[in-house]
Image (cartoon, rainbow, N blue to C red; front, top):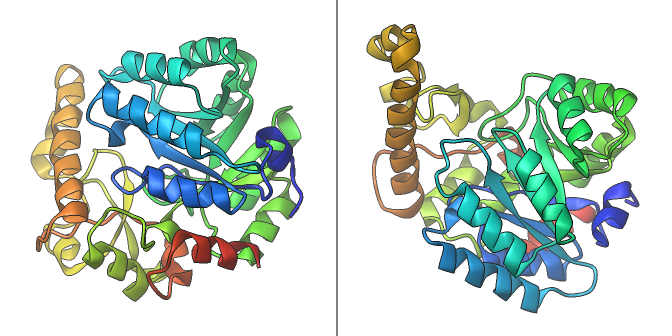
Length: 315
């Protein structure tokens, strides 16, 4: 499993435990690092900057040889905490930052000054070239098998197109649930992989047992796209509740989205409502089960410790 990502982050295996909203935490990343892979947490999983700073310090103290850790930053204007989060990470330190949903220019410039690498989420060649020209250290190629907000291209097509036209490492995100999937992504030219959904059903994840069990009970064919969370299509498990509320935007939302002045505000309101729904479903007992996951839960057969999930990925 030797690949470019192992050298880039000085880790044993070319795997990043992907940042997952509400799911990822320091306990998961510590176990990931012990097993020789990298772990990443969304900065938005922390309510305050002090909590984010404490998490970075905890991971820095726990980091073993052969492990690495990072944080995910939403870098567009919708994240009002972005500037403060970037400042905290540059002060506290981490191995890498993954940027999403916006221009990573400021993050790249500031992170590089303190020796932090920056990887950028991309879904196509156009944006990959933009971030490469800005100085990104690698791209996270989000394909159409990813969980949450995914791309439109197949893993093979996206990896090969980026590999042919870019001069920085391509880290594939989506469609990895076992070692054969990793081998496949590496054969396409990926420098490594980012794996998320298989870790939802981990002992260390701070989500409800019902959410974890759903990842065991449901499979790839039970993943559907919904517009009812953030206004942007997002993959969720097709529970009876999701079937009941439907996956398309309401007629009113569609109408308001046609108004250029109102579109931004409608999306912000939909995002707020959707995020509250997913948070409640992930952390509380509720019949409103909107559980985000990707098709790679197909390989999830039990709720296991992180170390055992990683063992399945590398054996």
